[in-house]
Image: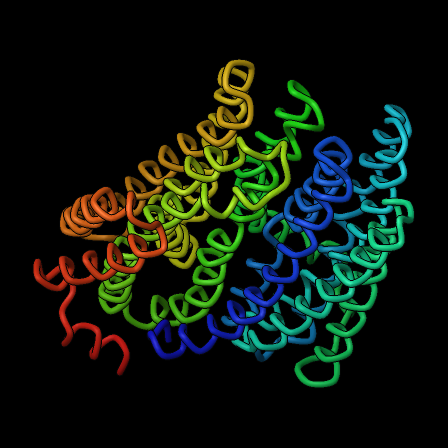
Length: 470
């Protein structure tokens, strides 16, 4: 069930480990930015983002599709697990081959060339990681997913800090990343086989074809979503170079935990919502309505809080990263549409409207590319952030139009009116107290938002109790 207590428990596992990972990552990023400077840090950022994009794109939505199929047919888990693993490996090979050929043909300058080759080696192992994610998500065993991801991040960051402290080549940072990926993939596979399911490969190759056809919409969502989030940085690198990329990536790294929050909620809600939709579509609509309400309430204050603290936090970074504060402020306002889109995508995919779910990210990716080429030449990193913001807002409008057409019986947007009023009150309190202290304004403004939400009955105490009790 997509009940609050289940989602809270599972989300707390993922978020707790991600917070620990983010604290370590921030220490590493600040240290790396200080030691390397914007130019070399920009090179490292570009390579890490490239690998991140390949990992997301190379999965082709198979992990999410696999989780849905395992939820629906756990009795055939060995066969399904084998098919998912084969699909993950087969689809990663073309991406790996194309990536290696491009690196060899373009042969970028040292150390980017060596860094990219190491990153591509790590990319292949994500086929195993994606398969284990399907199993963990289907069984709602998110503590395993969280702990293994944390283990990989810990090894990588520890290696990176040692490399920087000893003044060794930045290439060794990516070597540590590859080693961490090998260890994480091996540990995940051992637990899946020992605790959940073995892998059966007793199927004809032709049996994969129907699955490939069904996966296509999931693949489009995965590829296009990644592109709409990160292709602007690739374009920024192409137009403005390594320094602008490093400045932008500092802001994006601070923004990333809030992206995680939406991805974590999406992951933990999806299996339960699929179960509900299979049994009772009316109950599924009610469940979705509650999640719309809480996502609408969460996005606006988060955006305001990030806007408030962006400049004070980034003022502690070394010289050269001053523009990161404005970029982070722009990014913050993508949170409200991203939160609501999380519910939309879950509804469309759980109700077998994958094609409609796939079209939104495709349109968003196209919009990001076009707007990036239009805005980056004039506004640099801020233009890249504006392009991404416009893209996610456009995607949300499209997603909700499809949800309204195919699944829901009413429009969600009236739910935004009272949270928007709370945001106005929160903004007014912020303007009043900001000259005194940002660290006073942030908590007082947040309390003002909560008070306004309850005063206008945007949410009631009884509704929260009902949601918590399931």
